[in-house]
Image 1 (cartoon, rainbow, N blue to C red):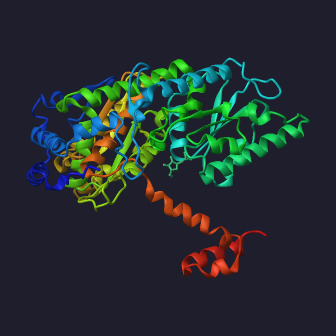
Image 2 (image 1 turned 90 degrees about the vertical axis):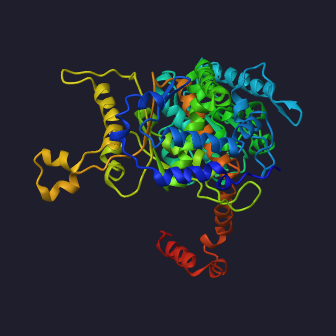
Image 3 (image 1 turned 60 degrees about the vertical axis):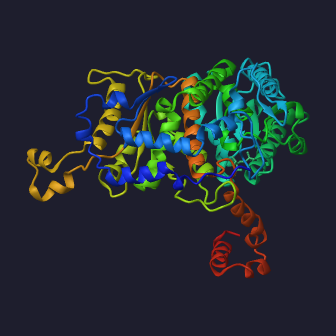
Length: 551
Ligand code: F6P
C-alpha cells in the first residue's frame, strides 16, 4: 500500500495558504481585464466550462496545479485507469472507466483483461433491451412489457432514476420506468398501485444482492405480481422468469431469490455502486432509450475519461474543478457546494451527485488508516433553477455562508415554447446568465440609493457580490452530454479524494446504521427484554411507537 502524501505538508499547500491570505476577491475589478473570461474558460468534450466567476487567479491556478503534482495526482489517476487496486480498504480495483472502454481495449485485473466481459454483458443487455422494446419478450400472457419497475437503492437506484428523468425525450413511446427504493412500505405500495402485472417487467438491482431494502421490496413486488395474476385466473408457472430480471455481482444470491440466472446481468466488484449507472445497473435506461442511445451515453463518459487522462493540467476541466473545490473547502472554508442545473430534466442530478461525492469523500481517515489532516467532503446539494431561485438563493446572495455553485444549462430546449410575449427558453436562460452575474457583481449601496430606496432599507437591499460560480453549458442534453457530465463529476470527486489522501471507493460509514436497524428488530416488535437494553432515548422512542401504533 502506498502511503498517502500529506497535502497539507506540501509547498503548494503553503503557497495556497499565503495566496488565500492575500486574496481580495473583487469580481468588478477582476473583470476590468477583458481577457479574464477567455483565460478561465475551457472546453471538455461538448462542455463549455466558464470558471472565470470563480476564485481562480493565475497564481491560485498555478499553485493548485503544483499541489496536484506534489500529491502525485497523475500517477494515481493512471493507477485507477489501469486497474491497480486503489480501493485499499476493500482490496479492489476501481474500474468504472473500464465499463465504457472500446471493445478492443485492454484493462488487466489480476492479469485478466476485463474488457471482453464488459462487452459480453453489454451485448446481452442490448439483446434483452431490444426484445422488450420490439415486444418479442413478453409476459406470461403474451403481452409486451411496457412498464419497467426498478427495485434498488443507493447506486442501484439513483443513477438509473436520474438518467431516466434526464433523458425522457429519448424514451420510446409507450414505455415507462418506475423506481422503488425506500423500505418505507409507501414506496412499493404507491408505485404498484395502478400497475398491470401482465405488462410489468421487474428489475431487481443490487450489487451485493443482500441489501435489506431491495430484497424486502423485491419480495413484495414478487408477491404482488403472483397474487394479481392469480386473481385474474392466470397460471403463475414461469411468471417470475418472464417478469423478473436481476442485475448484480452476486449471481448465487440472484438464483437463491428465484430469478433465472439466464435473466441475470452481472457486473464486478471493481465497480462501486455509486459509479455503476454505466454498468448493467443502467438496464432500465438501456430499455427505455434503446441500445444505440445507451451506447452514445457510454461514449459521453469515454469522451470525459479521455479528456481527464490526456488534457494538460492547465486545461483539464475535472482536474481544475476538483482542485478549485479543494481551495473552497480547505482555504476559503466553504462547507457546502450547490449544484444548480437550469434543466428540469436534471431534477435528480443533485441527489445523484450527493451519493457520488458524499459517500466517496465523507471520510475522516486516509487510505492507510491515519487521520486526515484537513477538512474533507463538502455537502453537495441543489435543485433546478429557476425553482431554487424562489427558495434558497436568498442565502447564497445575501447570507453569511459562502456557497460555491455550479450552474449547468443547455443552449437548445427540448420544447421550444414561444408565445406573443416571450420565448420561454430565452427567459429561462436569462435567469441562468443573470444569477451568476448577480452573484459575482452584486449591487452596491450607492446603486441601491440611486434607485431611490429609502436610506433605512439600503443595507437590506444591497448585494455583496463576489460569490463564486462555475458555469457549464452544452449544446443540448443528449445521452452523450449526460455521460460527459456524470464522468466530469466522477473525476472531480476522484481529484478531491486524492488530495485528501482518502479511499473514495469504500463506504464503511453506512454499515453501523444497517447493523443497528437489524439489532433493533425484536425491540421494535415489542420484546420487553430487548427494549430494556436500549438507551433511554431509543427506549422512549420505541415505546412511543408501540403506544401510538394502531393495534
Ligand atoms: O448504502 C451503502 C450502499 O452499499 C451503497 O454504496 C450502494 O449503492 C447501496 O448501498 C446499495 O447496495 P446494493 O447495490 O448492493 O444493493
